[in-house]
Amino acid sequence: MAAVWDWRERRIPNWLCLGGLLGAFILNDCVFALKGLALALAIHLPLFALRATGGGDVKLMAALGALLGLDDWLKLFMISALLGGVVAIGFVLSRGVLGETFRRIGFVLSSLVRGQAPYQTKPELDVGSGMGRTLPRGVIVGMAYLGWILWR
Image (cartoon, rainbow, N blue to C red; front, side, top):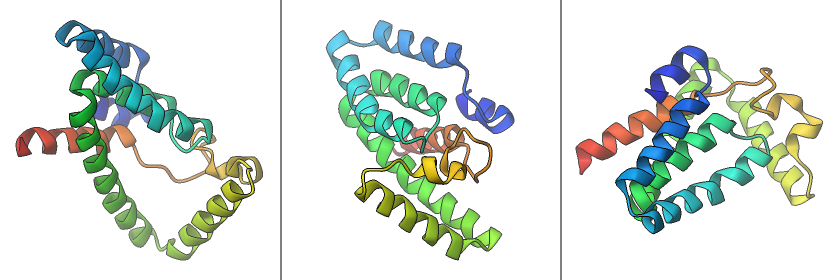
């Protein structure tokens, strides 16, 4: 449901993530759910702080972390990261922006090394600005989740 919503609206609603989170705590042992939730937040909150991912993506991954637990969430994360990378490469190549992408990656890395937030100098690097190119992360995560379920 999050994938469809993200595809259509480019956002993931709070009620959907909260419902998933509550469902995860109902279905699972609290310690199991908290471990998955904590790992998801530990990885995604820094990305959110750097404005490299949106809040809906953080909340979706947190709910999935609570639902799947530590080990299975980490597998889902790796699958979604690889799938997202493949989709991003396809996007970059189809749009002819490979050089621009490498320049932006270099800028982001050099900014982080200097202790600066990249989006402060280049607002298009803020996923919430509407100025940059973004992928609907909920769709990528949804595809990864389906792949993970079929693979299991």
